[in-house]
Length: 476
Image (cartoon, rainbow, N blue to C red; front, side, top):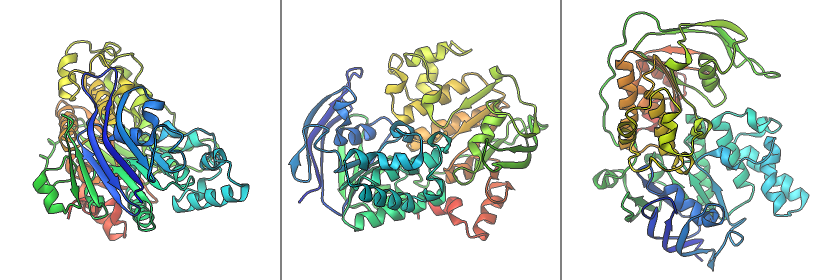
């Protein structure tokens, strides 16, 4: 029996000039994985939301075509609950409760399962996702990667027959991402089916029985298995296809930012940062890497003035008008009813059309910012930060949701800001891009490492932490 089938599936949002999806066909059997790729904004998230039934039940759109789940026509959301499990691109969007354990139990409880079965599923899901030590934590204290693991655990607790995963490794640190890929392989081998939308294709190509590429014009191309060599020939819109980026310009002289003996801990929690010191020169790009929950986002918040250190000091931080800040989750900093009006809220009102063109958002000026895809929202927040011509640029996961073309645009914006004299503090799990873009790398782990990319990654490899090296994630 087929686990999932879509025939002639199409979706048209009322605020968009053309359909987001058109004529999508997909057939999936138990134990099969379909990998969905495509440029940012081509409908990958729309496809998963439509297969799950959230479009049009929760998100207004005109939908046509058919979806079958486990051999039965599914005309609405109710026929898919419990059989299809969706992990959304933005993990915060599906967290409903205040405590980790309660979040994982929420789905099975709503299925009215016996109490013992709920407890068994919760413990199993917490265990396989590595969240058992955090079971009693408040959900709003988790890092972005921990929230993504929580969304996955809550979905697995439903024991769905088909997993719908939207960039499931985007917020995970490299070891957690590698562990997730191994877990996904075991689930599929055990008979689950999965549809995975991803920009980083290479780690999943070997597992995928089907590969679908969505295009901006609505065409869909499908392959039965695809080797890395064939993927290069087909020029799939993924990441890590071997293209090199020019090195960033050498930083200027002097010190723009000085962090001295910085320590910080959240109330009731052990120290997160202890006696951290480093400096940042004008025009320097410093990449910050490390495990989820290791303090990377907290460091940006401290430098940006959103948190105050328990000890130590920060010197050289310019005023708010000269700091460009891109948050990990774009919706945290988008407030206006349209894309164009977001620019009107900032200090730079001129050149909006040019910034939209640079960000690949031409034609979306009147769209609501939250109607954009995650990749489009990320590029919007990047454009808003760069339009300030900042002296200090704080970037939290700026490469999430970007295909290779748009990744290059984002990198170009970062490099141009550095060339203009901005000091850049860049947090990212995209290690191949960090290695090519950053002058130095700061690793926040059990032991802090700071040095040139080749020095830090070489030391991590010698310590047996290969998942934190770019070579582990680049196409072989």
